[in-house]
Length: 230
Image (cartoon, rainbow, N blue to C red; front, side, top):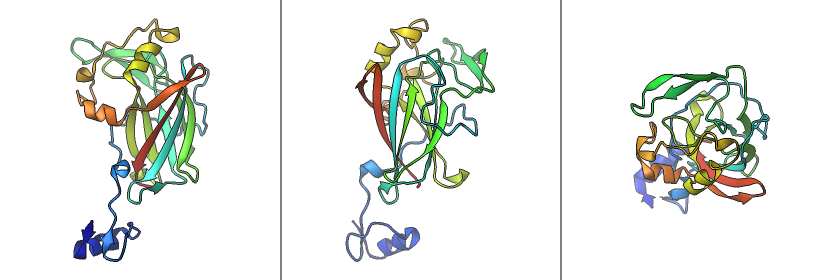
């Protein structure tokens, strides 16, 4: 508990902090600590507002439920824009010049497909009264320098409130998926966590940002809670 003059100062600064009783301020639990931020990646503005972002792309379906909490008050954040984008089964993003990284040096070695003008596997929605949105997307493939991941942005009001992070796929599911269908020709991901250009071997970071997933029909259901400004 935070008490005394410090508590009063914080209460004045944040207004609606949880007061357990007069003179005391409730500190939100670990589940409400702000979700780790990660690099924005190949973000492009004005994605379609939609729940199904697949746009005819082949791959293993993923029904992804995201819940947004206001990390100050530990309450569901309603009306927050939630946007996702990820690569397809072959590691290709829409609406960018896709970069190729050399496996030995991890440096840029050129470009793959130029997909500018397309919007597959991109979309946004607004959270409901429970702070939730649900997308139908695909298990992302891999590309040079990275573990498979889905980019997520939440934005409550203006650009300055944007919270960017990345969500990872459980390793056992990744291996299973990459052995079949449109993923098989691309093979298993040779890039380990130690060589990931963003997380740089930080296993704890990956663990905190890994989606909880279970089989569902021909694909998977996943869910994740993001604590951000709301």
